[in-house]
Length: 321
Ligand code: NAD
Image (cartoon, rainbow, N blue to C red; front, side, top):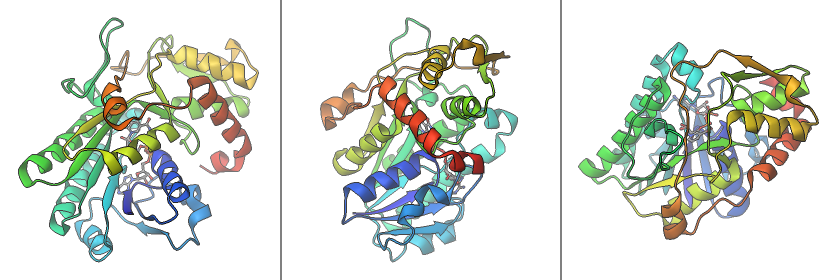
C-alpha cells in the first residue's frame, strides 16, 4: 500500500507512520506536513534514509502543491491527520483552526476527487459531539453533533465536508472519531505530557478548576491500530467511534501519573477553569469492535507507565520543543 499521510510530523501522525513502516515492510509512506509548532521531523528521524519514506513540506490549503505531490505517485489511500489541535489555542485565536481544519480538509478532499484517489480516511475527534453529564450514555456513531469550542466546531465542519464529498461526488471516504490520546511524541502543551515534563523539571502541574472533568483515554498505538484496520477493512462511507473504555477524572489521571513518578498531590496547582470546559466525554466503540474486531489492547495504567518511561528516556526531545 502507498499511503499519503497529512500531518505526519505531529503526535498521532508520527506514531502512525512508525506503526505502518514497522508492520508492513512493503508499504510506502509520503508524509505531507506544514511543520507548524506542533510538527517535528525529529519524530521520524529513523526513517529519513529509508526509500519507503518521503517527506514533503506543504500546506493542506495549497491545492497546486497537493496535486503536484500526488499526481503521479500512485497513492492508494490518504490518511488525513493534519489539523490545528489544541483547544486552548482555538480559544485565543480561532482563525487558523477554520483555515486548516475546514478549508484545508475541503482542499484535500477536492484534490482527492480530481485525482481519483481510491480511498480517503479522515481522523476526527469525540469533541464534535459536545459534552456529557454524569448519567448520560456514551457517544456513538449516531450521536448528533454539538461542538462547544472553536477547535471542535472546526473539526465538526471538516467531518461534514468529508461526508458531503461522499454523498455528492461518491468520494470513497471513511471517518473515525476518537477519544483523548496519550503516548510518545505528544507535544507538552496537552495535559499528560505537560504534567510529566513539569514534574521532571521540578515544577507543579496546573490543573483546571477542581480537576473533575472526565475523559476517555486511549494509548496512541491503539488508535494507530484502529485507523490501520479501518483503512484496510472498513466500509466506504462509514464512521467508526474509537475509545479506551475508561472514565477517570483529570485529577485521577494526574494522581496516577504522580504515583508512577514517585510524587504526591502537593505537586498539583489548581488554576481557574477553561471557559466552556466540556465536562465529560465517553466513547462507545461497539461498532468497530463488532465489525472490524478492534478493541484497546493497552490498559490506562500500563499506557501511562510506558508514556512516563518514554519522556524520561527522551529528555532532549521535549526540551527541544
Ligand atoms: P498535532 O497538533 O500533534 O499535529 C498536527 C500536525 O499537523 C503537525 O505535524 C502540524 O505541523 C500539521 N499541520 C498543521 N497544519 C497543517 C497544514 N495546514 N498543512 C499541513 N500540515 C499541517 O495533532 P495530533 O494530536 O497528532 O492530532 C492529529 C489529528 O487527530 C487531528 O486531526 C486531531 O483533531 C485528531 N485527534 C486528536 C486527538 C488527540 O487526543 N490528540 C484525539 C482524537 C482526534
